[in-house]
Amino acid sequence: MMNDILTELELRRETARQGGGPQRTVAQHGRGKLTARERLELLLDEDSFEEFDMFVVHRCIDFGMEKQRPSGDGVVTGWGTINGRLVYVFSQDFRVLGGSVSATHAQKICKVMDMAIQNGAPIIGLNDSGGARIQEGVDSLAGYGEVFQRNIEASGVIPQISVIMGPCAGGAVYSPAMTDFILMVKDSSYMFVTGPDVVKTVTNEQVTAEELGGAKTHTRKSSVADAAFENDVEALQQVRRLFDFLPLNNRSKPPTRPVFDDPERYEMSLDTLLPDNPNQPYDMKELIIKVADEADFFEIQEEFAKNIITGFIRLEGHTIGVVANQPRVLAGVLDIDSARKAARFVRFCDCFEIPILTLVDVPGFLPGTGQEYDGVIKHGAKLLFAYGEATVPKVTVIVRKAYGGAYVVMASKHLRGDVNYAWPMAEIAVMGARGAAEVIHRSDLKNPDRIAQHTAAYEKRFANPFVAAERGFIDDVIRPHSTRKRVARAFETLRSKQTKTPWKKHDNIPL
Ligand code: HXC
Image (spheres, rainbow, N blue to C red):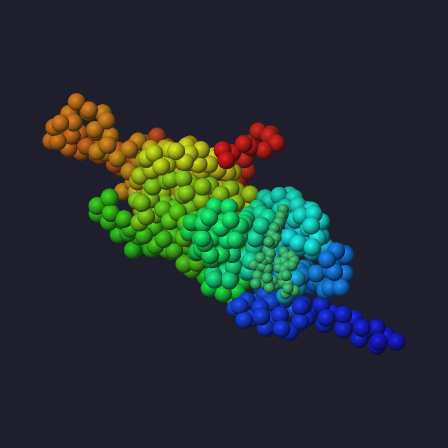
């Protein structure tokens, strides 16, 4: 008797695991995609996955749906560990009704989201779905709505990561859009609110799914996605790597790792990182990598607004968020895209107690009608606002230029930077010397010699970090080779930083 029951259980489990059957698995593999369970095996530690709701079936009786009621209803949910740390997961099974979202499918996702919020562990969603289950109508929409509401409640409480591993269309894109990170797989995933056919009908544009919402579009043009990877295996490995940088929730600190890289390591090559000519570019990533523990840098939005760099490193084994101007692209200028990119990153770090290192080399904000008409004032203010409201430890190094409003924005002392350093070659001024001379000495504009003299005088006065240091806006002028040591020591002093902000319901960041 007992044996029969156990056999029945095994049978039921096996049926659920089969999804839509072997041919559907072949089709999924044929598209270069893994199945929902294969993905979870790669994402989670071996044998750590515990599944919930394997036997759930939908309750729809329209359009003949009562005849197909696959166990699990197109999504695999549960929890497991990544390098020993708890995580809740859901993985949509495209083999079952195209991974489409029914009321019960959504309920399964909501259950793990609720558990994740309650137990203070991140949630990772592996998305591969045809969107709302068409046969269910408004029940399916209601299900999505419940998921959205939980995304909003979880925001800033637990890290939420979305991996797009197949189609993600219609309202389905809005759940990932509200999570902290969106990672895509190249050539097999796409996201759009309305697909190519609707676009053709409404706007008469002819566009492929890949062009409209593939990984390239979303990592380079729209900035909807934070990174893209070659295939499912690489994407899942990189999710594990990202996860290791993050805390479990907003009340716990990010994990620390044993360090084998001396925090006091001098990096002599940094003394010659800057070219002699201050208008020549160099690669800011070199500085980031040389400061980081073991040269390990996880970059966020690498392909978008390359004039600013954002990502995670560790110092003495502790996670640090890095924001750095990149002089190689548009001279590292701040513009709408770079301000938005960095502001979102700064706010993520602040939500989850991740200290921020800011490396500054910025000639100011990008001028022009394009920027002004598109609202650079509001978008630039996002970064200003994000830095000013962030109460996590903030350490800033002015590497070279820090001009104008951009000087203030980039985690200056005035926005409660905790420790602000400058390299000896830093130039902190309202604007570049030549521009300054032309404004102050307008009457000499027709006399190039006089302008050159004024430029030289302005340069002598301001093209150094000491005017700011005299006022205490810079805490110390440091030697480039000692940057890792000085920054690591500064963060060490800030580990138990506490601040007070006036009570408010929430702020009103310029959106
Ligand atoms: C029910 C669906 C489905 C859906 C796919 N399927 N999407 N069933 N509801 N939304 C089923 C298909 O009927 C098919 O079943 C199986 O899944 C595999 O789909 P195929 O079309 O054979 O696969 P493929 O050729 O790879 O195309 C994938 C696709 C396409 C691009 C996703 O299926 C598609 O366009 N689906 C509809 C997308 C859509 O319009 N969704 C609603 C969006 S609106 P059989 O049994 O025939 O193999 C929305 C609103 C949410 O999501 C709003 C929230 C607020």
